[in-house]
Length: 88
Image: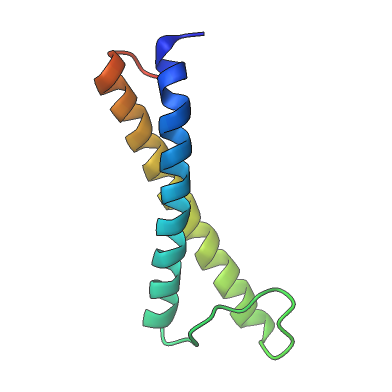
């Protein structure tokens, strides 16, 4: 196994956890900024409309995907700086 891959594993794990927390915080802030309740609705939230539930799901998916991509890219770039090779 390449050195870059071995170095990337713990870095990727830490970055992934941090990214999850960051994505959740970003989504909550965006949801509140958009003028919605403090908590986004879940799929089984009976009092919420289909529109609100699907909007929340789409927004949450977009935020998590963007954050995950940014975190993965930052982790790979960091490993390249440390090892000189891209972790592929």
